[in-house]
Image (cartoon, rainbow, N blue to C red; front, side):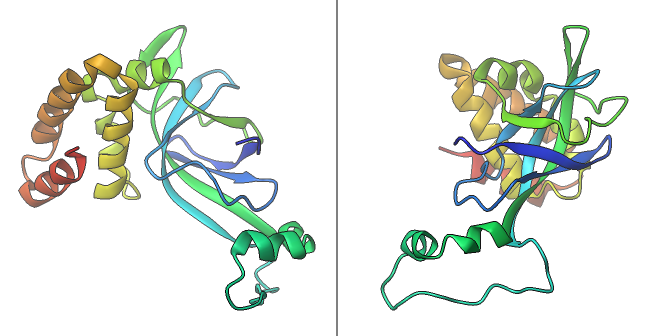
Length: 194
């Protein structure tokens, strides 16, 4: 993906980021992102994605012939992309302060208009800290079961051969955090299963 995504709204708990225009391949639900600008390197997990008109007073009018793909409609109507935007909602799950990874909320939000990148595999494993990144993630109401499970699966893939031990540690952390919510715990664990 060559599109640049930038922070357009931010708090210490979450941030919104947007592409300059519509993209058909935004960062995925549950994907861990990094903002590498500002005082703290900030990490978050995608909790939502939305594409639509940049100006809500100008709704998108359906175009295209029967059987024509979305890509073909866009290619035949390049002006449409100028009127659309893709935005993402991201729950913050940790930060780095003076080279120390901390799976807690940062003291301040990431800077507005900072670039947002996919976190590297090393960064994902480091900030996940054996599942401790789940504490701020589960505290965010936008992080539903599907988001939490996707984030756990992503970190496990990033961990490579250490993926299975990470899954065990994350499962134990989930059990500790959700002991009063057994149905939610079961829902997440079932969604994490490979």
